[in-house]
Length: 494
Picture 1 (cartoon, rainbow, N blue to C red):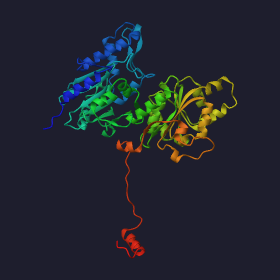
Picture 2 (picture 1 turned 90 degrees about the vertical axis):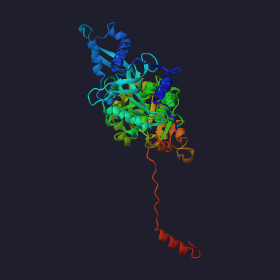
Picture 3 (picture 1 turned 90 degrees about the horizontal axis):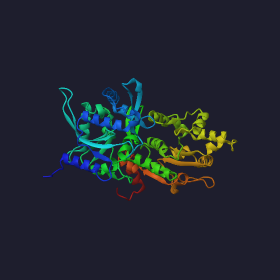
Picture 4 (picture 1 turned 135 degrees about the horizontal axis):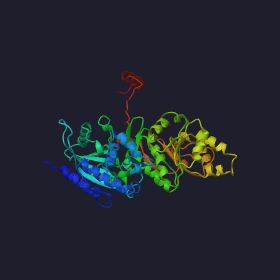
């Protein structure tokens, strides 16, 4: 008879993996109830805001104000709060002593990874008590806390069960209203049976769609299924912090939270690394794999590089007033990003010359008008400031949106620019274009080396896009074809 590892042993092994080595995770075996979690959060909040509290601890009434603010109606609203003010999620408190006024306390810094004010704790066997006669007591498997707030929940089953049983368990908890109170801040679920592991963005039970369960793959697009290997790749610090702060997108139109897929995350990181080395390049992601979402995150995350003043996202004029801008507007609703209106070159100039570190979405045609406006202003302060801007250009559909000739002209004007092209159909030497003079003929010549690739073969395997349906369509009826062959070759037997 086959012996399967007990679920409790899987849980213990996972915790051991999380807290081992140079990990920032700390195991807290003293936190099992909601009251204990709130008290733990309170201590961290006060410790991180000594300067704001000015040595006056929070009263019970003041802390209840905070608890009320952190009990969200759904995970989407929690994500909106987590996006924060300039990347810092805060709570507001009206102090009981009127002389102390109203204060705002820092809770989580999206960029503060593995140090500073961020703390990382692991708890297990949290007791969710029943709240009505029809309810049941529940015990959660493993939860990861950032600054005392639950951010990632992991549900385990042993290898005798499919990982989907863990997924169904989470959906049952959601239906029962278990992930409420302090647990309403969750941003990510992980389900595993030890052998197969998946992750998914937090959502209410009616929107938690199994189609969005995602398998992790490494930089070479090789699957990572084992739960301990997954924990090492995805749940270690700083990766876990990034997963719930930097690799999430709030979709305002659908009122939902999106977690990037692994190939999107690897592309974001590859571009970021290239930019830190002042290198340009291109990303080859097959059509239908979410290039717009990936390029949005690339454009946004490039602003984390201190040497980059602005990111310019270039789209083809035909796309600007359609899907791309609609998606960007939806994604950027809770983010620090500007969408350039298509009818105002003056507004584009104003944004380029401002000191704000933002992303601007525009077209080649608009940039062309900007360059024409400054053509006769050489030697002026505005001209020098414009041409010396340290810009990162992100180009969706990079061959359609920007011609080799136009890219060269823009590079001559914006002298300190980096370029990152996105394409589903790169041009290689074998299918290179015919161009004038010494203009680039391939994607690599135009943008630089391929920084990350995710081909249609890999996308079909991951079910990120639909596969091909091949059907044979005959141009002749079978008996007609036989008759033609007989008449052509009367000596042959069919």
